Amino acid sequence: MMYDRMDNDNSPNFITGEKIILRPLDLGDTELIVNWRNQPFIMDKMICRDPFTITGHEEWVKTMIGTGKVVQFIILEKECLRPIGSTFLRDINYDYEKAEYGIFIGERDAAGRGYGTEAAKLMIDYAFEMLNLHKVFLRFISTNIAAEKSYIKAGFVREAYLKDEIKVAGEFMDVILMSKIRS
Image 1 (cartoon, rainbow, N blue to C red):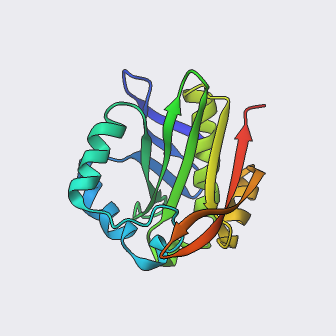
Image 2: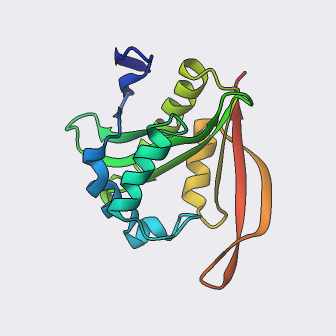
Image 3: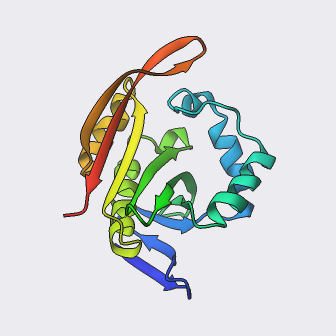
C-alpha cells in the first residue's frame, strides 16, 4: 500500500493498491453516491435500505465525515481512474480503538474482480497504520455469500451469527458479524 500526498492532518489524499486507488470522498461525489446506493442490486444487500437523498448525503458529509466520525473513500479503477464504488470506516472510536467497515461496488461490471477484497485490505491497513485502531468490524446480511468470501480473503473472521437481527419489508433477516484485530 502506498499513501500519496499527505495533508497536515495526516490523512492521505490517495491510497494506492495493485488494481485500485482510494481517494477521499468529497461533496462533489454526492450525486454519484446517491445514484449508486439507490440501485436495487446495491440496496438489496444493505442492512440500511432507506433511500439515499442528496440532502441526506450532504448531511452525512457534514456531520460524520466533517467531524471525523467517518473516513470515506471513492474506489477508482487504477488503469482508467473510473469511480466504481465507495468504502468507509464509520463510528470511529479512538477510546476503544475500533471502527465499523463498510463498502459497496456501485458499478455492476466492476463486481467480482477483486476490487472489494483489495479495498478491504487497504482500509484495514489504513485503520491500523494511520488511525492506530485495534479492531475493525463489519456486519452484513447472511445471504450475501459473495461479501463473506471477499471479507474472509481480506482477513476478517466471523465473530457472530445474529439470528433475525433486522427486519426488512416485514421479513426478519440474519446478520453476520466479522472482525479483524490488529496483530
